[in-house]
Image 1 (spheres, rainbow, N blue to C red):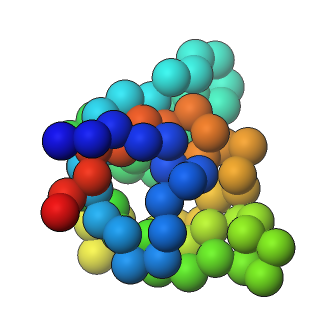
Image 2: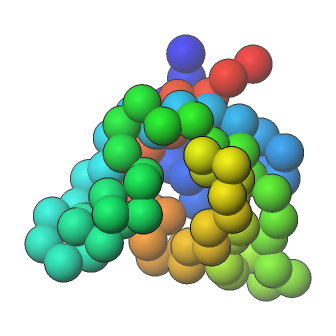
Length: 78
């Protein structure tokens, strides 16, 4: 499977989180939202200027800013 940065994913694209590449407060916050390796996600919407991004995860919807999505690697599902 190809791995991409979450920021580059398009609407309706799905994948599994492969890695969260940030530590500290931001890394902790991302992980507390349930964005941990092995979690399946789908990009739902993007704002008109592509920031923020809404994603479907574990039956709920989360929004992330692009600077947060930059730290998340996703294995794409084809």
